[in-house]
Length: 486
Ligand code: BG6
Image (cartoon, rainbow, N blue to C red; front, side, top):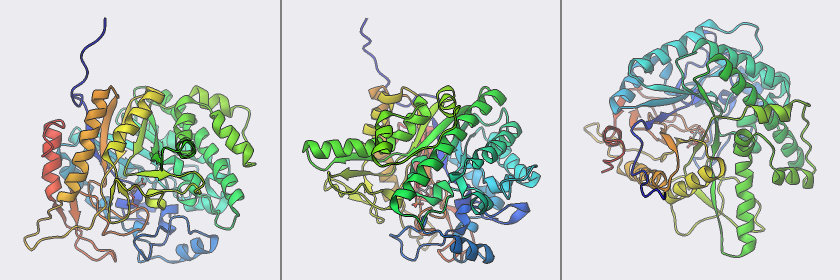
């Protein structure tokens, strides 16, 4: 019989929350035995539209290692979540969070990446964070690697470009899965794994001295190692903690053809494939033919060991997650450019953009959710979404961030529509529920938070936390399970 009903709104156990990354909030970069990580050697940008995440050379790393301050490396100071986690989690609980996505700094657990034994002090820190979350019934959703790895693995093996990284990573994952068994229902392997096609910040592999072909060769090889590591981590998790689930995570780049000209339509399809390749491998468990063709035509050779393809097939992820900030436009003949915090694609005349040139497109989120659901039929989570903006603190200390509320509201409306379309969307964690250091520019003044942190771009400030208007708004959104969006 034809079913006449459809879901009207968010499921009652919908996971509302927020997301951060260790290197953008924790600070305490050299505390309690922690080793330096790749994120902490990237210099801050001098101009806010520029990203420096790929400008890394052996020499720049050496200079960074000798420099023991955080002046040029703001990710070393974050917003001192390391010492404020209780206060911050209390504020998340006050907003009614059901889930908190954060990452473990690999370098806290294995400071050099290749020790035989983990650093107990690092494990103890995340024990405390997890206990604090569980105290408020907030489910931890942990990213195992959010744009960082111990810098020693870059210096010794050039990061993920060497298969050796798989061994070190899975030693790290085994330790944390065992330690936090029964406490963490959701894990993600690599943050925005697709951005590894753009270099160092994700692969931990220095490639700025290579020509374009060799860069791609190195990056896709590194990504292959990450795919295998992800499959092995999924296997481990299911063995160690059978109730826990593993997800993958991409930066979803919704793209539209610049015109109805079939050449533009086809170009947009190709651009889309470059994005979906990553979920195809991690969710369907195999390299798609369109990428095999791309590799062949571009003379790229992925070296695999005999068991790799079997592992990918045997251990796909349980759910799919993605970040969504913007959409872009693709025109045939234009060189495929990266978008978002890595540069910008074509302009869409129908969309407004943020102060950083990110094109705001809530409907694109609905389009994306439908596409991903149609393609994979796996539960989906939007694990990053938000507006980076400059906030003004009024004389009485209040912060009226109506622009942020407006951005988030429009995206939530489209998520609700996607649920009505039949998409199985299980959670939403906004990016940076507390102000943090920007990934691309290392600025502080590009703020995403519901919670304001008193710190400027140079690191001056009291670090005092305060509630913005959006704090109370998101609290109402969560308590009404998405019904009250005004
Ligand atoms: C995502 C990253 O790409 O975008 C986050 O996963 C990042 O780490 C977020 O912070 C926003 O980008 P930015 O450059 O504004 O911090």
